[in-house]
Length: 247
Ligand code: GLN
Figure (cartoon, rainbow, N blue to C red):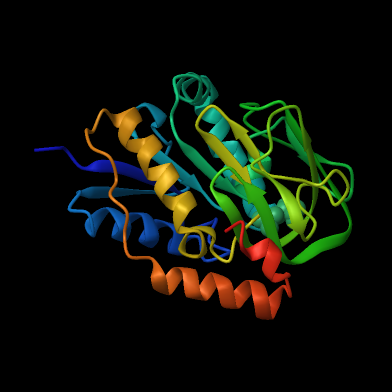
């Protein structure tokens, strides 16, 4: 009998701006449908995280103020975070959480909020905010959702995908998000995983492998999800049918 997959939801009390809870529910449900047990660990902002004790970590987005508070807490055990990430800990960071993986996030007034420095990545606030529906091409097909960020992010790693429609990391280089070892950072929310089941499964498989839980995730009946994706792309994004065929 496998032990439960331990998923840490970091600071849901502060980083809850973009329905990040939907990401947790999606991961939990897709495991339950396949008969796997999951344990959700909700880490409150007064508590130190314990990266060595998790199989998968979710870090959401928040306002600049919350980002600063969370950054301060996270940096208390930066060495543990570095070791876990280098060891292959799967980590999904969205928006403000994505920015916190890097060296700093520079506020509009020039103040820098230091990040965890897990990645060779920097973010600087710019104007206007980059807002709207977004679709990117990635290794798991098209990832879609919504973005809303002032920060322009630049890094020296692989991106999560290339922008088909929308702004992405900085509105200039056509890249969106980051991929380093088993770390995924992105500006896409809304939330991200209910709309992108292939990405949810990729992350779950990474977590199972990291945890040493045996098994391959069997495909689920995602017809409802696929229909919702199709409608979203056609009606909200007006993407041509040729694009949709890439899936
Ligand atoms: N500080 C971030 C920005 O606006 C917050 C991003 C987010 O969580 N949407 O760039």
